[in-house]
Image (cartoon, rainbow, N blue to C red):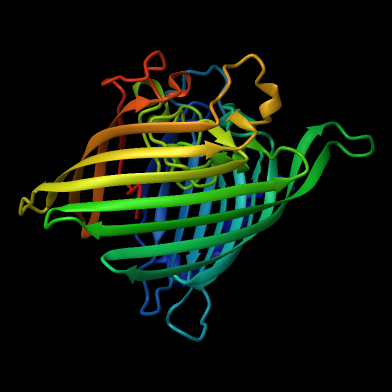
Length: 394
């Protein structure tokens, strides 16, 4: 149950010749230590009137430029089908993802109304741990069904958003050789409850205040696989799967000078803390004050803003990097209450018709410096910095 054969993706792609066969291929490439340089192509159909669009990515890990003597040379493939079915109601969105990428295989099928409600069925498993030797992954997999509801509104001068998600699933691990089969698995049911609320308001014409509060809890008899734990500083491993620059050991944004300096929003969003830090219960608050200082009228830069931020979180009993908290006896204990603060710069850009915001942030203060993202010797350090391109509070 840990493999999604590449030929399955190829057969699925061949079933869509009208959507993908006539499309012009675009070159595709990414890098990690286990596979070296991966070279491939990407085919993406144009969006139809009802939002139907399909994307196929095929690549081959060549082993080139890898520092390892033994590399993994293998096919990489993914197929995404957006709104593949004709359903009543233009606001009903569906999505199917099938992938076999950088040591992970998976399937995701989701349906719902954007910013209102939805449900999904997701299976993700590790089929080659040479891509994921870090403490945020273990060999195993999960099958889960998340159901969510989301609401937007106003409360006085505040614009608000609230989202609640309930997830139920089963995890399995591959502990070793079986008696009558080649391998054996340990399985357990688990559940997750997640709540998130955000609020924005203008303080003056150029100054805004944004607040985010979130809580998540995991429920299981034994500690979960590290890839499904709650991450304190940012996105969890499943949220990073779509980004080839993050998902495997030695990828460009997690290697060398970039290690600990790229921030992918998610989890508790405590920007000053180590991105491997996780727990089983997490309550967090993030506050930002953003002041626009310049509005250049150029295609590449339309806004320059300064930001001051503070983040705080309370962690559950299991806390540390990756797996079971009881295995952390030789590491420094993690405080149950964590805090950081800092300042930064926001730049708004428009490229190829798409607007996005880049972030440079300096989380100069953390209250538990041994677990800081960088500069672990100092609670206060002007050398601690992060960059990112997605908003922390949306």
